[in-house]
Image (cartoon, rainbow, N blue to C red; front, side, top):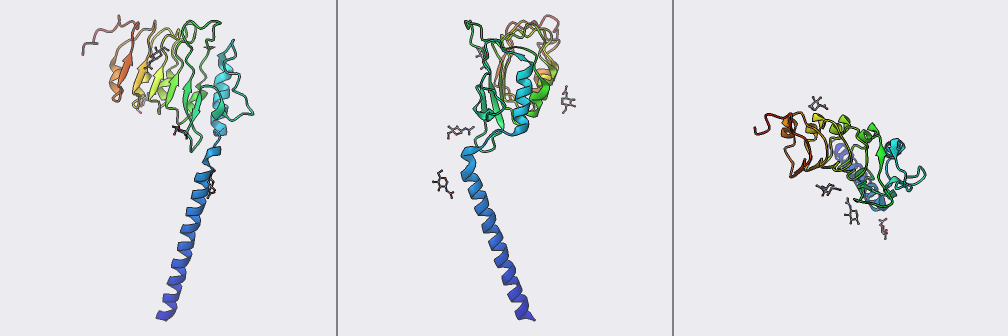
Length: 206
Ligand SMILES: *[C@@H]1O[C@H](CO)[C@@H](O)[C@H](O)[C@H]1NC(C)=O
Ligand SMILES: *[C@@H]1O[C@H](CO)[C@@H](O)[C@H](O)[C@H]1NC(C)=O
Ligand SMILES: *[C@@H]1O[C@H](CO)[C@@H](O)[C@H](O)[C@H]1NC(C)=O
Ligand SMILES: *[C@@H]1O[C@H](CO)[C@@H](O)[C@H](O)[C@H]1NC(C)=O
């Protein structure tokens, strides 16, 4: 009886060992294949919707094609291992001639980029629309630059929910009702609000 139990447990151990080795092998080959990661379909669709609502007269986003891996599109940086979209570098250089500004609307499809770390839309020309409040729900952002992009109106206090933000640049002709929301940005290392109208803020010294 004891003997049979011993034998069984050796078998169990052997099977477990085999399982562990198999998993390790699968894991390893997966890891090795990581040079070929492509962006997840959901994130590609999110970017295509984002592009659809933008005005792009100079066709800066011509590489954003449905049949191409979005990790190869201009301005898009993905995670090497997972393919998730991490960065959108869509800054427009100052005084670009011919004008290469992006404009139009910012589609909330960006909320489907669950790993977005870096968003730079500075220097573009959004022709006086306000910063959309959903930007405050891009919870993984560490870098946000909307400077000199002709956003106007009130800066949405929802930006105070971006608690991981380290760089925030909102230079431009915008208003801010109060600065309470800045208190939520506990990781901030760099803040640029130059040009922003604080006239209605009476408590800013606090
Ligand atoms: C991993 O990839 C390298 C280079 O692409 C290749 O030389 C190597 O044989 C691969 N190893 C395995 C275990 O597939
Ligand atoms: C991706 O890999 C490249 C080259 O191997 C490396 O230079 C880069 O830092 C990596 N990027 C990330 C986000 O890990
Ligand atoms: C934000 O963009 C502006 C204009 O493109 C640039 O001058 C500034 O350095 C950027 N801010 C940060 C924190 O990178
Ligand atoms: C900000 O975050 C808080 C706490 O997670 C949540 O209750 C609130 O609705 C958020 N506000 C906005 C505008 O997203």
